[in-house]
Image (cartoon, rainbow, N blue to C red; front, side, top):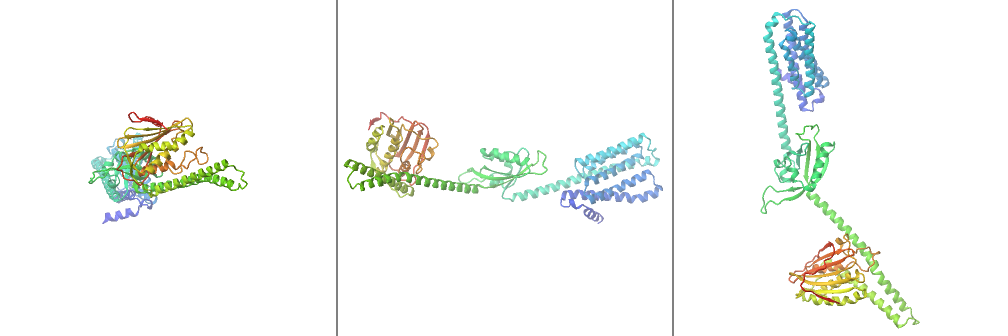
Length: 602
């Protein structure tokens, strides 16, 4: 009961500044309780000793002061909360006690001076290096005082009863050393137990958190990972130790991961990073363990007071943001598609303004001239010329409208094709014959090359003819006078390769990825030197896709362009999506993989 009352009193004397910290409060309570017991016991024996001795000498006065100083240390600690000052006073009391005993038992030659070693040792039970150093200074000062006092003859010869009591004093010093050692071991066990309990509570709490929590040392290695490693990293927590987590980070994101850890370890604020990790499920499914990539968002913070390289210096909290990243990417794609649609609309308006206004102006202007010629001043030749211009302009408008309708049908999936066996060789000859006059007018050599034993292809004759005519028209349009355009049809395994090559101006590498987009042309609508809507290749792409074919483009500026259409030999189902255009920023291949090709000039 008395000990419980003293513990309660010691707790009540703890300064308010340390009551919130359980560890610091415990140290203050132990110090107050031990000093109260020592001081009360020593002062309680003082009356009996004085009654026995009958007079108060220097030794007795020193012992009384040594007994009172622990109570003064308790008063200082209770009032200020400064354990360092209070312990310095307590160390001075213990040193005074040892020096007083040494003074009456031989001075500097007294074996009791060895008890000064207890002073710094006892300091370790209440504090760290500063406490031990301060107590050591006090003990050394006391030892020097004894040595100087012995030199100046301040100590008298020990009394006979002191010599007889020497074994008891040595035993007392040993008992004190044993008590101090026991207190230190008890403190160590208590703190170790508290640390283990706190660590277990922390681990239990973190294991029930859905986020992955990891602790990293100064080198970035993982020293702790919670149970969320199984669901977010596909690994047991022990597998993430050391470089386990780093090795699961995507190789392209590893510099970002290490930089975030370094910035957090050396900064005062938290650091955020988002990186990819390789997730391998722990449980084998029916399809086996298939690794997947996951996005983790990490918040890294420096552990305050972490100075040991072997301990945790950074704590990281990571959560799975794969779905959020997918949503962000979907929004970005939607935004890009919206911008692309707006760009297409702008190009459409520019194209319509250029391609429709020009022939309409011609039709309106020449028709007004014909209608206003009431006096008959225009001769028959002029009237025929104007009528021909109006007719050509009308046909151009009709071609533009038909092309727009074809594009609309293809993109909406409303266009259908009729599959019939057709002779691609005959189709190629017919197309070259139709384009021969335009090529001759432009001073361009038009050739067609047909491979031997070409089989028939199942397809829509009108659609495939439109494909070939569009390709030839583009090639002739962008080839200067003196150039050459070649239409080649060869068999390559189970496909027919139909290609149109020219020696024209070619296409820049930056424009190749956008080929086939509606209304796209290599130059703007107002600065281009060639007429056209930019819809020809888009129509070709759609019609080739309806036949299940494949479209590729090879081009280099100043060298020429080669557009290849690869059509399967029958039995291919119609697809709803336009064919993808595979582009190559290189000089077009001129050679043909045929044996003894037939070369004719139209």
